[in-house]
Length: 116
Image 1 (cartoon, rainbow, N blue to C red):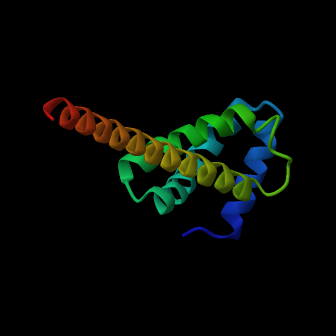
Image 2 (cartoon, helix red, strand yellow):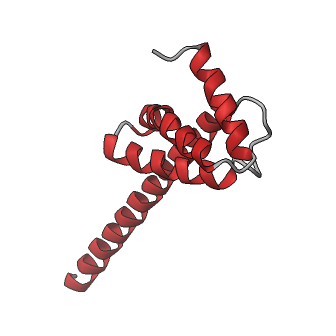
């Protein structure tokens, strides 16, 4: 069960990771994975896609904890990263489907014109 103590532990790990402690970063990412997955799954509704989004979120978190994270609430920052990553993936999927649909519609029109 997630509680305030776990959130405080994350905050401490994030602070240590921000200062370059590699062991703290490893522990932080391991503890962050379920949070990122839960947020991504709430947006994407697909476990496969949510796992991808969570993995990309953790990569971003590892790269940016020392530079982008302000030192305030780590869990809120992580959830924001995960949500944004999941929304980006959802938008990309919508654009891909729209392109495929437009391409299919275009081919159908060309075929109809050729047969006319």
